[in-house]
Length: 233
Image (cartoon, rainbow, N blue to C red; front, side, top):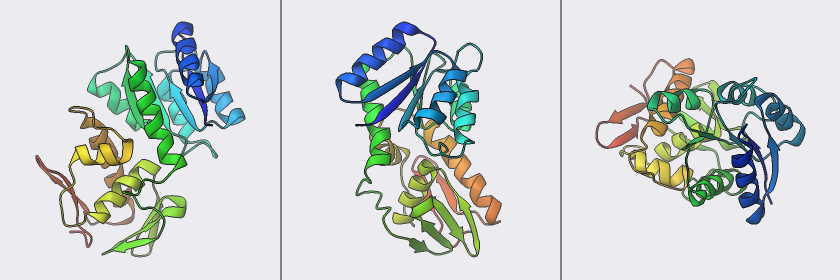
């Protein structure tokens, strides 16, 4: 059984999510505002946070940032649940450290699918990701124990999603990997045209790699996805 924290100032939505997640076996904790929500993150140590954006006192973007910068919750999956559905809103959410994004109004089956996909990433390692052993390809060494990547003698920590993206690119080095495959392998679903999710995470991953190397390791293949260049260029 997983513990899920739901943070939303709409009490009707809060109760709806709580009941439906409890019916499929989850332990659900609720908060009506961002301040209480972040306090419960530290107190309850949930396996997953479902987080609204537009809330009194502290908005969801701020709470997401605090979760990511808090020791002990930095890797906790965050599903942002909000009426703000524009690409710039999604980008802002991903920049704040959100793992997935679901726009209101939503179907309960879709919510359960997203929750299951995020929990799968922390509770079981999909065979397609194969994170069990250290892997080295060209300049790049993946260290699964702490979601880190080493290039030459420099090491930097990645988020679990960034690590999984790089891992899939390593396993398919030399070949293009589509955004759809990344979504399906990492998130467990392939929403139509939801490429912005991948673009933002790829941008963050590239930025981190550039902090430890001046080479470029990830190519964008227009119309075809992304490809790893193991020795850089």
